[in-house]
Length: 598
Ligand code: F6R
Image 1 (cartoon, rainbow, N blue to C red):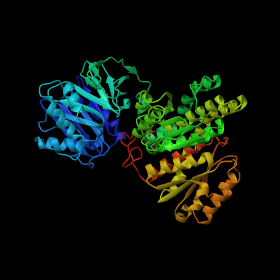
Image 2: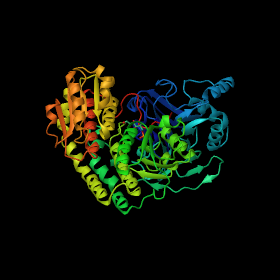
Image 3: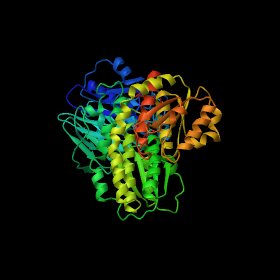
Image 4: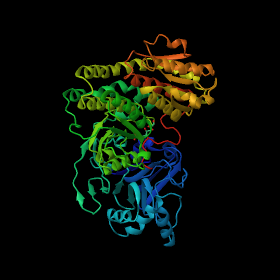
């Protein structure tokens, strides 16, 4: 949420900053701005997307600068509230991701001291604080002193007049250094930098960093210099580009067979060898904590762990877990987050540790904040996900949860070697099952076109397919703006049926398992109210056409594994609904990909 970038080099900073900024647009896009260092600092900013900034800015010379794309938290999305902020003397420029929680007192004190403010944001105070501290001093020292006066969360990048350096600081918001040759960078995410370098240094909480064209200096909160080698990033530039697809979301949906394959690679051997990181752990229950789509993956995980490991599992939304009363039990706490930066999930990881629980993170982004907050990390290896709506990261989270469930089951002797072999072979079949769904994209597009005029849509499922209904509804509402609600199919008659009519289609995820007759009953209840029913069912279901108006067929897959192809069908469904409605699919309104505020 909010993307920041800084450049110190010998080339013209403006086009490089714009290019990096566009690659961060998924972090927020309600306003954008840039500052380039010359005699003073030249600041340009505007309301709207980065394209608006690009068309409004004149060409400016200068080889050092910072830029920002905003997701508004404090202050409406206007050009006055866009970053960067300079102080009163046009001497410094600041971009920020995070929240300064004591900004009201700071602003009052600064105004009393003669400073003039031009925005409603929390960030602007920091520009004035740095300006006050700077004088003829080093920018790094001035930023360090200014930081001592602020509370809250931040990734800052700061430049000042006449200096060929960018100073950054990080606390609970991501910040990475890109190490180049004759040029160095700061950015919120490595994806911004892949065109320029594959060598990065992850800035840690409490650290400050100074980049010049030829040097990178990191210091800790006490001012001591920190030695840290650059790491090579495994992601390539192609991974972070659209590659001919009209949207990142569609590209990422189509990458899922290979993402699943990558996620399984090497892991199955470890599962077969029973070389678990969980050996000897004293826990008899599991708690899964996450937000949004990652929470829906966690709910699937609950069914899997209960099935394979016969262990009780609870799930909780991160922002609720943080403030809940600790139970007497001592669960293994599993935190699911694609970005590894979601503030509520990081806070939940800290709380779990405070409670003395063992913690595991399922995460996609290498080196992200959560990896430093937990005892064990399981990487999902989905590659970079740029579309705001999570797709391939969800599916690879499911893969990680299948593997975790098998490990827990083996460890607790709840599954036999034979059962384990059969589960593994089902996992190996998933890329093909997903490819089968992708091959039906045109048919799903046509079907979505038929229902794209709907205002409301309901999604139902039972058992392990209930979270798939939730995830289908979430995808649909966030990108097509159709009001989507997911329910356990048995719950409709406890209230939501009142909302059904011919105008509100119901998507039913149907499994040929012990819940089959029940969901057929639920579908009949829906049809009796006149709502059209679209079923997502497996090919071996020869009855479903009698009950549903339309059917999306999945390859015959055992019910515990069909959540994977089923969600891919619903991702395409949501995508084509949004496309038929002309929605900005990769950048839905009001949403940012990574939520680094509470
Ligand atoms: C929806 C979506 C969000 C995220 C949520 C958690 O498509 O992407 O609901 O799942 O913000 O993000 P992570 O997984 O990064 O913690």
